[in-house]
Image (cartoon, rainbow, N blue to C red; front, top):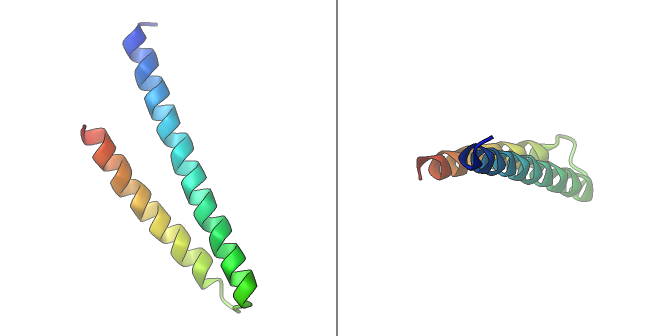
Length: 66
């Protein structure tokens, strides 16, 4: 494999790992907030996961345009 293909593979796999970790952290934080506040509907889990996905999409689009 040429060096350029390896570096692009590393770049995109690192991007995917960051996306997964960020969304997972947001969901985990939302679950902890919902449990702490003893809410009947998991509003923080839903809201934080939605905002994290939207934020990650904007971040990925910006980083791919460079």
